[in-house]
Amino acid sequence: MNIYDLTLKELEEKIIEMGEKKYKALQIYTWLYKKKVKSFDEMTDIKKEFIEKLKENFVIGTIKIEQVERDKDVNKYLFRLSDNEFIEAVLMRHDYGLSICVSSQIGCNMGCKFCESGRRKKVRNLTTGEVVEQILLVEEDLKERISHVVVMGIGEPFDNYENIIRFIRIINDPKGLEIGIRHITVSTCGLVIKIDSFAHDAEGANLAVSLHAPTNEVRNKIMPINKVYKVEEIISAIKKYIEKTNRRVTFEYIMLKDINDTDKCAEDLSKLLKGINCYVNLIPYNETANIEFKRSDMFQIMKFYDILKKNNINVTIRREFGSKISAACGQLRSKKEEA
Image (tube, rainbow, N blue to C red):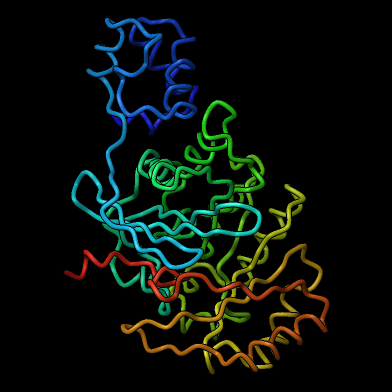
């Protein structure tokens, strides 16, 4: 078992099963997440007999960095997994610190028409440890601490729900990576069945919803998930979520030329979100060679923005990162897959 798969509580249970004292789990966790050792032999305050037991039951890490592309304030990391599959993560430098966008699956079954990641069907879920390791390996590469995490890379996080909840608990744990819960964001394309659970399980992490259209008519054209969960179902679930958590929700909205960027779409979106504690993040589309959609021109993006503002909808335009190295939103897809 990859030891990074386990929360502190789960590791305590395993240690007790091995006939050892519960407190030893905290010793191990400290070595893993504070001192960031790569082998059990480096854990110098643990007896050799127990070290051998640990080696028999666990490994420390299963993935490695295959390639890094760097461009100004962005690094894109290609990781090789133990089964020789590949995933990507993106590191961004902001004025408030380092933020990483991690992947949750190999491939994605959601099939959003504008998204490069979804061109490959889901192969499998990532384990909890494989998501945790993306952060650890990038921190090791940079020799710096990551302060913000978004689960918005390859895959639909809510389609790998249990592992992502466990991941949140590990990186938020003061004995783990100690990343503030308000600095962790999980994005879903609208798996309504999990939104209610997230309100209870995520313990304060931020929720972002990839909405990308204000009506079923428009959303059906670009997001197959809408045939399962309609726009009104998503909005109803979000209202309940906000009522339970008192947390603001982000709606991601990718700007596709002549598809969802019209003045009418802006007016419809304003009506849809009226009175909801949210803000809209407008994302200039990042074009790829494999998909026919085009980016809205900046004049129309600004016009869309102004209509939302006029209707008292909180709105921002996302700062662009990494498009030169295909590391921007919607562009993640392992180049190794295409070799």
